Image (cartoon, rainbow, N blue to C red; front, side, top):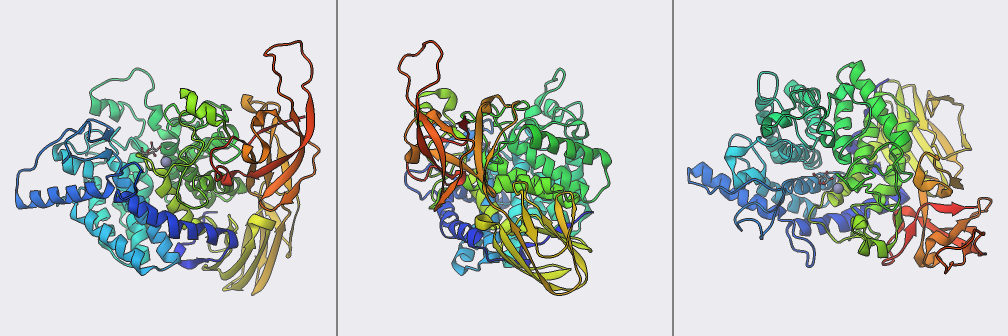
Length: 636
Ligand code: FUB
Ligand code: ZN
C-alpha cells in the first residue's frame, strides 16, 4: 500500500507549537546563517562558503576566456590560512553543502511564508553559485578552485557527490518556492554530467558520503528523466561490490571487509545492520527506500526492513538520536547507548526522519512515525537554542560540564550550544527539516490519507481538503474538518506513548493506525491521553541499569542542575511518584542522597532525604547557561 507525501505547496501550517518553531527558524536561524555563510558573525568560526563560490566564479570566468588558472593541492579535509594559499579553496571539503542546505530551508520557508527581502537575498546567492558552474556542468568549488584535473578521483573522501546531492535538493525546493529555475537548471546540468560519467560501461564508483541517491530520485520525480533514477539505482547497487571502488581509486587492495564507515563493506542487499558514520548510513537507507518506490525489489526492501529493525530495537536513544560513538561519528555495536559519551548528531536524527518517512510511505506502520516523532520532538529540536542563535551538533543524554572541560574523551560533549561550527552541517540541516515539517505529516494514495505526524494545518489532498486543529504537543487533542472529494479512509497514527485514546468515529486498527471510513464532509476528533510516564530501558543497555526516564506525550524530559542542584547522580526518582505539571516543568517525588565522603566503606544504603525533582523537556535543556543535565535518573 504505497503512498505519496503531500507536497508543501498544499500545506499551510497553523499549529501553536510548530508555528513558533518555524517562525524562530525564519526570523532567527535563516538570517543568522545567511550572515554566517558570508562570514559576518563576529567570534564565530569562518565558513568561507560564499567566498569559495566567488573564487570559483572567477576561475570559471577565466577558464571561459581561455586564461591559465593556478592549481592548488586537493589533499586535505579542511583548508585553512595555515595550510593553504589564500587564493585556494578554504574550509571543509563539503563547505558548499551549507549554502545549498540554507537555500533549501529558504525555499521551504518561502512556501509557507512569502518574504520578498529573503527571496531577493537568496536569488543573489543563487546568482553567485551559478556563476561558478563550469561549462560542462561541473559544480564543486573545491575542485574548481584548486584542481580541475582531479575531479571525481577521490569519491571516498572528497564529497563531490554529496555536495551535488545538496545542490539538487536545494534547487528543487528553491524552484518550487520561487519559480526561479536557475539553480534547478544548474543542478540538472551537474546531474547530467554525473549520469554521463557514472554507470554501466562508464566509470564505476559511488559517493563516500551518501545523499546523491536521494537527490537523483528527487530530480527524476521533478523531471521524469529516467537517467536520474537509473544513476541513483546504479550508486545504490554498486556500493560494496568487489573489487571495492574505494580500493580501485586509491590503488590499494583491502583484505576481507572494509569501508563500514561508508556502508560500503558489502553490497547493500546483504546489509542487515546499521553501521558506520550515522548520517551517511541514514542517507543511504533513505536512498534505498526511494529506489523502492519505483521497483518491486524484495531483497532491497528486506535490507531496508532489517536495517530499520536494527536501528529501532538496538541502536536508538530514547530521544530519537542515533550514532552512539564519536569514533567515526558512527553507529556503535548493538545496545551500546552510553549517555555521557553519546554522539547523537543532530544531522543523524534528521536523516533518521528522512528514512522513517520513506519507509512509512512504502508500507504504513506506526513504528516509523513513532521513531520520527521521537527524533523530531527531542534530538532535532534540542539542536537549536530557544533564541535560534546557537546550536548543538552532539546531543548527549547526560552532561557534566566539568567532564566536558577536563576529560578529552568527552570533548565532543558541549555543555552549552555553540554559535556556529567550522563544520556546520547541523544548523542548516535543522533549518531545512523544521521548515518542511509539513512534508512529514501526511501521505496519501487513491483510497487513504495517512496522518503520520500531528501538525495543525490546512491541507489539500486528492481525497479531501482538511482543516486540522492540533494541540497535540500540549494536550494530545486533534481535530480534522474534512471536505471530502470522494469516499476514502483517514488513517491516524496511534502514538506509541499513548495508552488511552478516543476517536469520535468508528475505526479499525491496523499496524498502529486507526482507519476511519469517510464518506462525506465531516469532523473527526481524536484525543490521545497525554500523561507523564516513567520509561525503562532494556537491561541489555548497560548504561541504564537501575535507571529510568520520564516522558510526557512526544517529549522526553531531563533533570538540570539549574533546577535540582549539582550532582544529579545523587537524585533517586520515586517510581510511584505522581507528576505535577508546573508550566513547562514536571515535578516528581524522589530523594537526594547525602554525599559520602569516604571513598570506600562497608556496604550500607546511602542516607537520603525526600525531595522534589524538577524535570524539563529535553529539547529545552541548556538554555540557562552551563549546567549539568541527565535524561536517565536512578530509581528506587
Ligand atoms: O561529511 C559531511 C558532514 O560533516 C557529515 O554529514 C557530518 O556528520 C559531518 O561529519
Ligand atoms: Zn551535522
